[in-house]
Image (cartoon, rainbow, N blue to C red; front, side, top):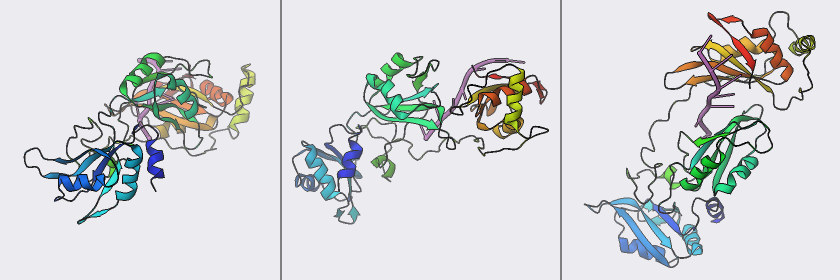
Length: 343
DNA sequence: TAAGATT
């Protein structure tokens, strides 16, 4: 049924729901046959097979616009999957003409560990129509890793959101001043977008003005390694019970342990690890002080080297303090580590 | 030699 398509497109990808793209057209299909086929469903305002300008050779796809969204929905239901000569045609909603896919996707960092898509959306919605909101979470803990994405319907709204919200305080927090900028990498098309499926799309597609089309099959930038995340309880030396040891130390240091509710963890900033230390090594360095929830070595992806620092997130403030006091000024690979609670 | 992260 067309209900799925309707729902999918009701989220902002095709606001008027009257524009269709038809793929896998037979080479010999004439413009008139194309028009008649779709006119049999409803009132067609335009129908066009995309052809080579010089040779008129069909690229195998076309557009149909209806005056009424119900007709468009009906066309999808009736004609998608239709056998036409030797081809099974695909009928789906298209992006609106002039649909912008550049500079609509925002990268938001500085989010708290308990950030949610809903809070993110609430914060950004005054600036326009939000197509998609994502909070990136650690797959083990489910906690926000401190960043997320907000996909706007158009670039003007996205630009206004940057102006209005970069540096703003994330609601519900006292100290999370978020950073808002355009995402580095393009948001891929929506799920089931024809862009993901069409096998013989032209190299450019002026009616879309879309950067998603060109080089769609190009190589993805390789991800650098990701830190392991295995619940380890290993102990080094005499610290067979890190939590107890940490609490003992905290008492000695007259530090409060009242923050240990186990909810968000405490982040330790580690400087001086040099350009070659990876997350596994950082883990090994810091594993004996408590339960590590997350490890991150900051990487210069252009140089292929570490920036010399990283972050270790412990379950509790106590463990973090224990790590700080244990590792500060420790020498590692010829450098003196500088370790502190992240500010 | 100092505070990130890019679905």
